[in-house]
Amino acid sequence: MEDCVFCKIKKGELPSTILYSDDDFMIIKDINPQAKIHLIAIPNEHVPYIDMMTEDGAKILGKIILKISHLQEELGLTQGYRLVINQGENAGQTVLHVHIHILGGEKLKEF
Ligand code: AMP
Ligand code: ZN
Image (cartoon, rainbow, N blue to C red):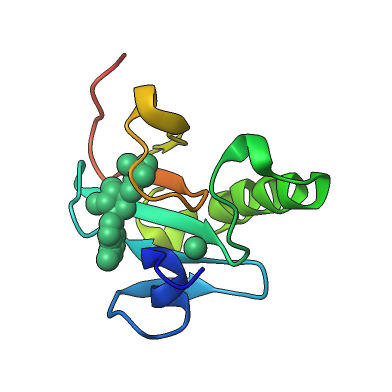
């Protein structure tokens, strides 16, 4: 999508710190961190909302979660981390391109 922030980062049209990327997704640093470590895992395919995803898209989300667990050490997350997906208005989703927040690097507040 032309005016999507995450698609622009993917295309190199916006600067970002990309920590990992493969054929399916990339992991970048969040520009406005809500924890000591705040990363975002972003599938390459532009899909605005979780409820618009295909089965294949959902499989990629599964692969992303598994890959994050394999990257714990290099991402500084060995003491634990939290994954969050904001879906829609009530959750405060601001970027309409499905993504997973990765929060860690410190003891997170319980909820
Ligand atoms: P959400 O509220 O779940 O849609 O999350 C969108 C996230 O994207 C927020 O945490 C923003 O800080 C982050 N964000 C927005 N623009 C950028 C950018 N250019 N680079 C990195 N992170 C961004
Ligand atoms: Zn996009």
